[in-house]
Image 1 (spheres, rainbow, N blue to C red):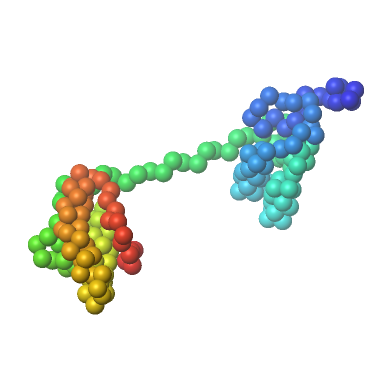
Image 2 (image 1 turned 30 degrees about the vertical axis):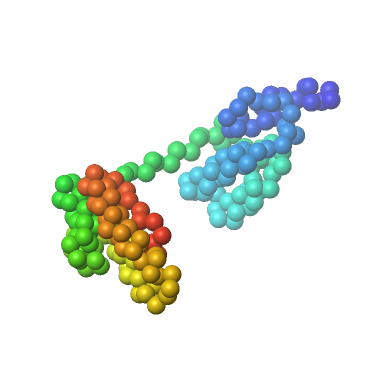
Length: 200
């Protein structure tokens, strides 16, 4: 134990993001391994390592058990203080849909109430959906729901249980598009329940 007491404080790799510990035989965590893996990948991208060296060091990092196992992977790349890799860029959300897109998305739901049961969302998908991801998303959701209702209606018509279930199904087919249209007009998300989503 005397040897441990005399061991320099830098025995634990400083890139762990925590105060250095004198006991280099401490077990590493998944976070410790992942951090070293990111440094190795960054070194490969910068040309410091070739493919074989990267693969070898990644294997060492993922199978490391102690801080002493991780230290040799990094010391010849960054010395005692490696540079921290740049954090990943946050996802950049697209622009909010304008009034025309919201109107088109709402129409994909509400046209079904005018007798355009499947044709309404299909028309919006083939027109506005070609240029607007927002219209396409709502048109596809509406189309999948009404195709599901149509298919279920055809199947239930020849069953005894269909006499009971079909009226409820058709009521939903008139109520839910109103909620979907309102959500689309308000720049919101809407998912129909019990829908087979054949069209992506």
